[in-house]
Image (cartoon, one colour):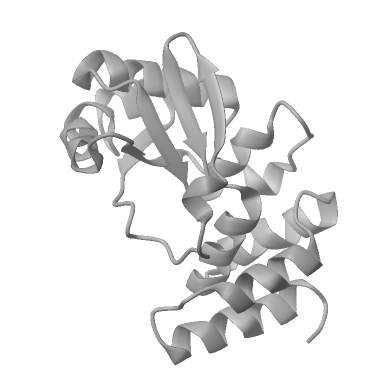
Length: 176
C-alpha cells in the first residue's frame, strides 16, 4: 500500500463517521516516513490498515461493515480498514509522544514511529513481522541501537513475551 491509498481510505472513513484524525499502527505505520525516506516493499505489503479514531477509539469499529475486510471498499480497492484498539500492541513508554503526523485533504493520520512499531512486531514475532523489522534495519529506517534501547524500556505482557521479543531481535539483527 502507498500513503496516497491510505489517505483515500481514511478520507472515506471520515466521510462515514465524521472523525478526521486516525492513529495508524502495525505494518503500515511506516507510511508516516514516506515523505522523508524510501520504504522497502517488505514493509508495505499489508493490505489492511490497522487504525483507530484518535478522539474516540471505539468509534473505528463502526467502520468495519463499510470499509473492513470483505466490504465493497475492500473488493473495489484491494485494501481495507482494520479497526483496532489502542491497547492492542506492546509498545515502549512514550510512544504516543513520538507519533508522526501527516495531513492531507482534512484528514490527519498519526503514525507509530518505526522503532515503536518494530517493538510491537518483535513482541508478536510472526514471520511477516520479522521480515518487516529486518527490511527496516537493512534500509536504515530502523537503528539496531535505538531498537535495542526501546526493547529494554518496554513493559511486556509477561516474561515469555519479553523473551520471545529479545530472541526475535537477536535473529533479525544478526546476533543469533
